[in-house]
Length: 155
Image (cartoon, rainbow, N blue to C red):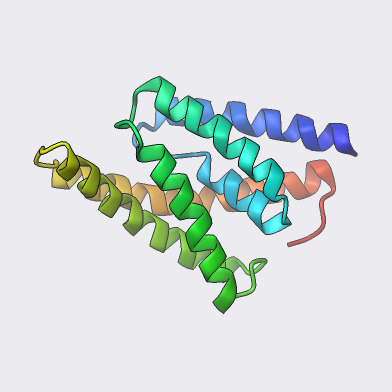
């Protein structure tokens, strides 16, 4: 079963890169990170996050440091959310997606502020909304495929 899990994550990583190519401004790695965290695979989540940061920072699509702060906040919000909700609940994913979408917008405004630039508010808000929708949709789709392909435990 280990090889199926590894193959699935390689395919997920490739699909995330492909999705980000066609939908700039969204992060398709965050739903995968949430899947790792829900399964309690913290070491694998750390490796996945490191690779995602290298892709994000290396591609130059976000200002330097944005992806590091973003993934740290994803893990933080997930951890705090687990104090109040059960992590394997779909409603929890919906709430965290909304929160992370808003957080992505706030982080974008903050990063632009650090660079002494006026952020394009319409773009920041649009990307925040798309990110929240993306997390909900991609988590559901990838969670469904993961359970069928890897035969992982039902979350």
